Amino acid sequence: MLNFSKFPHLKFLLDWGSGRHALSATPQSELQRWQQAAGQAGDAAKGQAFFKQRHGVEWLCTSCHEQPPTREAKHAATGKKIGALPPAFYAKRLSDSAKVDKWFKRNCKDILSRGCMPAEKRTCWFTRWG
Ligand code: HEC
Image 1: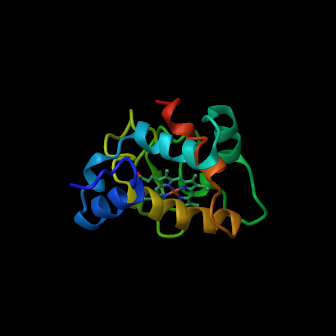
Image 2 (image 1 turned 120 degrees about the horizontal axis):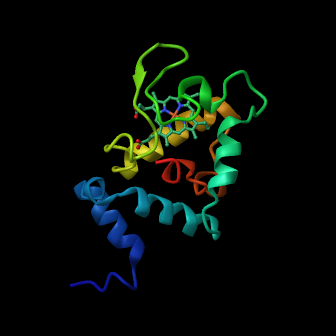
């Protein structure tokens, strides 16, 4: 048996390959993931400011998510329903790392014309709003 503590990236790849990562994510583990990547603790106040702020393009996070995002929202372009963001208001939130990554990638591109930095993700505003 491999010693995964020496090769954490291997364990990640194995989990990823088998799809097991999808079952193991929680809002807490996601926050920890971003805090580790950013090398800083989460900051809900900064996160809330980031969420409400315009970043140079027409759309902001609140174009598709309600402000505060504890309510169900409508997509700015398609009108499709989007569930509340805080896990306390929508149990499926942040329960699948691949889904979180996918939406962060898309959403941040729309808002910032680039991907979000780990420091921006780790703010994890929604954990405190629940
Ligand atoms: C163009 C519309 C749109 C914009 C703008 C947008 N989002 Fe989203 N977001 C979505 C949709 C659609 C989903 C997925 C639907 C769902 O999970 O209910 C989503 C899901 C999410 C999720 C949840 C992922 C999960 O695993 O549950 C997070 C977190 C998120 N968005 C954050 C943001 C942040 C932060 C911004 C601003 C940087 C932002 N969004 C801007 C449409 C948008």
